[in-house]
Figure 1 (tube, rainbow, N blue to C red):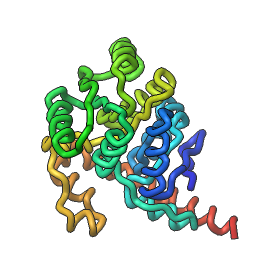
Figure 2: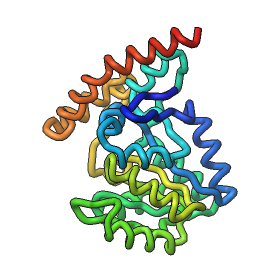
Figure 3: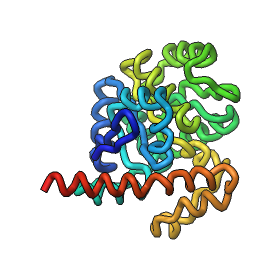
Length: 252
């Protein structure tokens, strides 16, 4: 499934969670790198206007659908995919890293959040090693001097998996740089996943997640930040839906 994002296109490259974890497990065992992006409607909106974001996305070899609108659009196009949220991947990725003997690096919004998430993950997952916890300053420029120094520390950390929780598009732009700087390291942009593990944010109740309305919970908790984002995303959905249906009719 591909999406038109202005002068370019981005595609979902892995259709479901099981396939994704199988690929990542094999790469971690083999000492091979990867870059994982979790696409949502907010990404589609940002990709239309941000050339650096589009370039960074092109460096990601693993892309999944993190958002029910993405899943619905794929179904409209006749190319179904499953929902794979970045928040739900933190623990499985850490388990794969532990089983393959690969240490983890956590780059979070604050050092306290990253360190607390690291402590909780190590307590839950036998054999997990956290080689590095970092929190860049704010505002963080993923292409600036601070990012250069961060990449140097990451390259020397001994980590085989890097979890990025900096928000889009910063985390994806940094991930693309990690992919180039550390080609044998896996890097995954997990958004709020680290905050949830650390207890800094409350996850929506399971019932709301099952009903596919987790977005409503998050918007209620942070209306000023997420309200405009969800509104902008809703505005571009009709165009994507039309293109998905048109794509489906052309392939019949």
